[in-house]
Image (cartoon, rainbow, N blue to C red):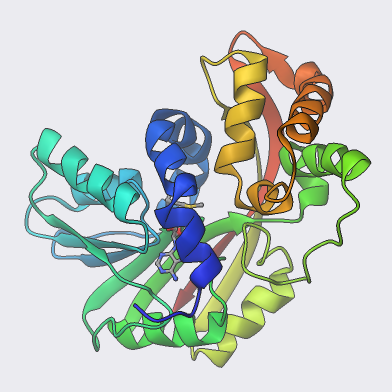
Length: 282
Ligand SMILES: C[S@@+](CC[C@H](N)C(=O)[O-])C[C@H]1O[C@@H](n2cnc3c(N)ncnc32)[C@H](O)[C@@H]1O
């Protein structure tokens, strides 16, 4: 693998990936309804050959495998070894045989030519250093007329699970905000920008639809454990706190607990969320 996307590889193949594996069930509870909304945009037939981009622990890949049935195929690609290991284990546990998982950087590595009939992603396409290169690569791997569908976050301003916590961090740390559009969960918050990337990558029939839904974060965890999990699972916050002392982090945790407490109930943290459902065709 090349050195491009190094910060992302360090996070997803390091501690970030480990905690995503540990908290897989909680993350799937949070993200499943949003992923389903994007998946429902694709009308699979039984012969489908689907690509799942940034598949992580494989929940969506296995879900697609079940939807298309045994004569179709689905390939999950990711840069995180621990998450892919978990995905492969789940496929074996569930006796699903029409999937494969590979450690591949979707931006820099060859995905093949005209192989897949559809490409999908649940929050796995916002981490590229060069998004146009990545989407050109995805486009090349699709057959003519092949479909693309993904879900990504709108701005933190309409996702209080992010903006509230960042406000708390900024009370303690004087940090500049990352440059707009830099790789991370909110890189695709501007729909015009997403549209321009897809146009430049030769996609057509682009649609971008706003989707609002409640999300349930860290179901089953206490409020203080939820805040600690939140810090280690969130790439933006991990980056912000990387130089902080233990005392400072403890103060930020306490402040985060206070900010998140109005959103906490016996079901866990429940926040409003806003995403984009994006579809296009090669
Ligand atoms: C927010 S997680 C989403 C994981 C999974 N799709 C889910 O919904 O649970 C983002 C995923 O994108 C992967 N990723 C980031 N950059 C990538 C790249 N250049 N190529 C392939 N995967 C990448 C990460 O390793 C991570 O698994």
